[in-house]
Structures are given as structure tokens and as C-alpha cells.
Length: 132
Image (cartoon, rainbow, N blue to C red; front, side, top):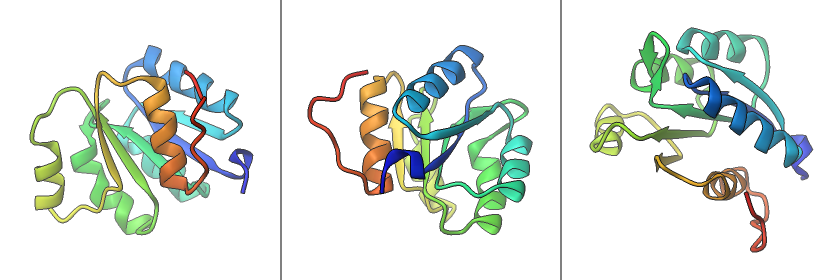
């Protein structure tokens, strides 16, 4: 499969980061939709198919911890990457609540690190020479 075969939903409350992620992943060839709030995640997942959800822990009016149970009800097999710069016990809390998350990444992180994580999660080859 090629990158343009994949559709990624990106949830990020910071507009600058959201635009950065959107541009970077579109340049990689993915189809990308961005949202800023948990309710928008649920609406998108109800309306359209996605291959991956990348979500910041902190979202507008909610958090990934609060929204993930609903995501799992709608799309139990959807790969999820959670990104955060705020929360040292993030992994323990998600696993302690029984939430299935494919990968946790801590900010700050490079675009190259995130791109590599996405490729691995989607089962795509990881290019050694890819740069952000």
C-alpha cells in the first residue's frame, strides 16, 4: 500500500501545530483531516472511514482520556497515537483504564519522529533518509 491509500484524522487543540501536522502529512501523500475538539473526533469517525487517529492528550473542551472510550465504541480496531507534553503518567493512566492505544509520544518531538511512528503504525516502510 502507498501513503495515499491512508486517511489520517489529527486532533490537536493548538492551531499552529494542527496546521504543521496537516501540511507535513499531506506532503507525505496521506489524506488528512484535522479537528480541534473531542466532539469533532466522534463526528468524523461517525461520518467517514479513517486508518489512524493521532490525538493530542489535551483537546478543546476535553481530553483524549475522556474521548477514547467513545472512539473505541465506534472504531474498536482503529490505530491510535496519543501525543502529549503535559502528562508524565499518561501511559499508566491509559492502560490502567483499559484503553487500547498503539503508541504514546511525548512533546517535544520532531516531525520526522512522528512521521516514522505513523509509518510503523500503518505498516509502511520506514525510510532511513526521510527528513522533516
